[in-house]
Length: 192
Image (cartoon, helix red, strand yellow):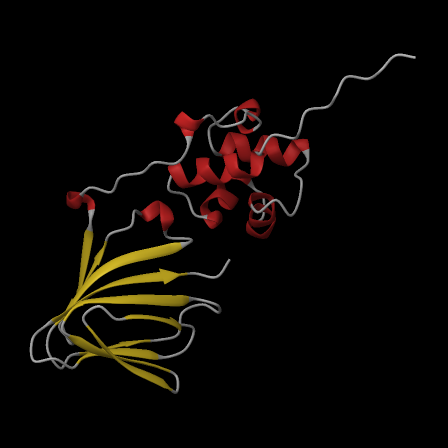
């Protein structure tokens, strides 16, 4: 009896699609528009919940300006994600009415997953934020001064060296309570 050859495992095309999309700084919405594949289906493909048809894989590959076989290759260690965001690429956003400056440290390619900020805020300033999308979290590490964070019915006073994680899918405020300006790192982590 002839024995069939062992079938190798399926290549990680989901990770390859995700990495290619991030490298090109495309959102799921943008890739959907380019490929004609719905945003919901793209999300399910990238997370490995759904196997795409050959036709859908073809559409996605060409929207990413890749050949289908590039999506079916196992990435080598040299191709693994390694992205530098230089200081001259960092965008600062000032909120003048409250004396807060957000420096977006993370590259735009990460914006679907998380945003990483270095924040400075003048004394007694209050930054008010509306709710983010459901399931979003904010993580804060205080580097200088003191701040008060209120999220919904919860409030915490934080000092240099303190850390806070909170649900940011509700109204929240950050107030500098020290006589000097405050400085903190903030990560906004979006729900999958």
